[in-house]
Image (cartoon, rainbow, N blue to C red; front, side, top):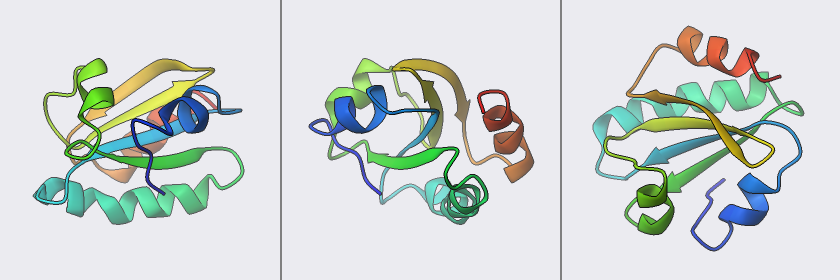
Length: 103
């Protein structure tokens, strides 16, 4: 599901448990490559991890607030704090290892 500047606070910062946010844009090739991987992770960690996508073109406020310079950037938030960031289309194992640290 998508998150926007308007829903950021309620969906990400006020969430119970860890949240993975993919900063992406429709024109970004690597974003399209990593999209199915995020889908698999969302299923794999269902009930333990919330996954959202933030379109940096539609929600530039949040993207600039977190200093997003390249996409895809994946960030893990816990209790409203940014805990980790992974930049680029990385293998599923890299993302899993990052996620596991916060479950």
